[in-house]
Amino acid sequence: MPDDITPSMTGPSNEDLTRRLTQARYPRSNSYDVRWVIENQMGPNALWLLEWLAPALGLDTLRPCARVLDLGCGRAMTSVFLAREYDVQVTAADLWVKPDENAKRIAEAGFADRVLPVHTEAHDLPFAEGGFDAIVSVDAYQYFGTDDLYLPTLTRLLKPGGRIGIVVPAVREEIEGVEPPAHLQQWWQPDFWCFHSADWWRRHWTRGGAVEVETADWQPDGWKDWLLWSDVIAEESPEEFHRTMARDVGEMVRADQGRSLGFVRLVGRRK
Picture (cartoon, rainbow, N blue to C red):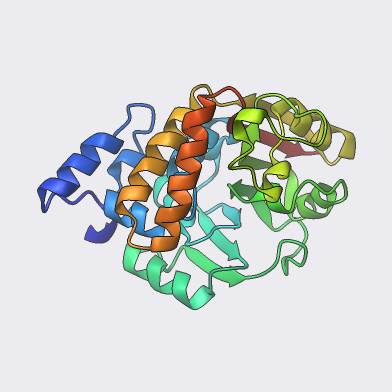
């Protein structure tokens, strides 16, 4: 595997960062160079979240070269992770990151033959029905998937019996009324209203009838991972925008201490 995604120990700062971010529950993610992950992140640590999703989604049980759609892949880190760790063929679909940029990143990682970057919007996916063995979406689905009509349209792309798995920022319990919790008001943004509970997501997918929900659960102590990662990005990201955003998110998550905010994992099988 190319050196740019494997751990680098070229200086004290990398050694300290690697030590700080190494977690026993994410053994696969630990094998990636922390600078590569920091430079290509676009929010919470997507590799950690995908590694948490993987057992519930059954990624280890997919046949070699199975076709996986990575929906809202960002800078294609998760797509490279899928190809490297599970020996699958990945379609890396994103609206905001240009395919040429992702193609360069994918090629530098050594997976140009197994990851295809595509520019597309989540409501206009140019793929054949039944073309994928699995669909994955990490920290993206909440922005387009709360529509009651969306999931049946998306799951047509799965083979019968294929699974879709997502991880999304979430709330522990649904927020009643029109105001966020008082301790979060100073950081709350309108798009945070797309954060929902595990029970909400289970009900949302179940009533649509397109999938049998196999998993809908809250990540224990997920907020601690979110806080650690936000602190690291606030200090180490090469992009000012991401440093600023991570500082704000870190302040919010630190104030919350897991009372309201965290992550939900959801897996459904196409009927």
